[in-house]
Image (tube, rainbow, N blue to C red; front, side, top):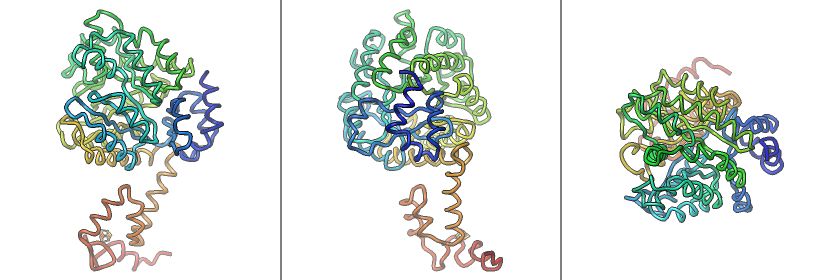
Length: 433
Ligand code: SF4
């Protein structure tokens, strides 16, 4: 199956639905899929599993609305299936477009399969976690065999996972750049760290890079979308934009090309921690090197000093990255760098990331008009002091309503200015039609 036939198959069943959701013509969407600049992650098995359900397809990439992924997943310290499912559901309720199950504790198969059953949006994973954990209880990741790694991908694809993060760009070349670098935080990607440790210990090339053809075969078999992970992503402001990162990006660009030639959908993961003035160069360079593959950003976080508030730190970076072409933002929760997120952390992180995504859509080609329609509706409701409408269309109506009702005004304005409401006063005197 090549990229073109993949798009045609989707047109018959799904393309129309997605084009309506995106406000794009079917032709534009099809063109995006054919060139690989747009992906619609959906495992072939999930097409069957969700036949009688309202599965929400998501297009990610050029001209499509900026999407938000939310990571959930149990850890060894907090291995609670119900809790992780609740997080996945709350994330979808507050606007997550996709969910990733990053579990490294509990019964990994059960958690993954339950999340697949419980949410009707695309679900992704990082299969090397399972390969490492099942091999040696998470301790001796270096004892994994290449077969363990590929078998984990196949097993999860068989379950219906829609997209997988694979750190195939961590190879001997990028490892050599890492050794020569003066990074403060060498590797902060968990999957990247597993592979770096494995490669050094076993004195071998990364199997996902060396046998990438085999990975593509598995992906083709299940219509699995590859999210080519940035195992060498910078983990602090000082490490941003170094040679290690760009060495890996060059490799990822080559791997995207190969995937497209085999009709496998692929997107690229990006950094990480990036100061504001380097985001434009970072996004544009990654986009050009990877021939405009959909770009999935983990942040970027624009400062290192705000643990507890990293959802805001990330949303600032995500909005700026969206302005320059990022397509897909990974939610960062208030507990980033501190602890496994709670349900309320997931809710807060999701809403804040949705705000960043919407601000990007306000300036994104293909989405600008639709996004602005929403803002204009709010502006008109404000002008008319139409509180009902303002609360209805707020990005989080519950919270807006709670605040409004907590400190009401005796006037028909709000309790900030009351009768001195500027909007009301000028409307009265200006007498515009
Ligand atoms: S009272 Fe003040 S803050 Fe409230 S709507 Fe009017 S101008 Fe805005």
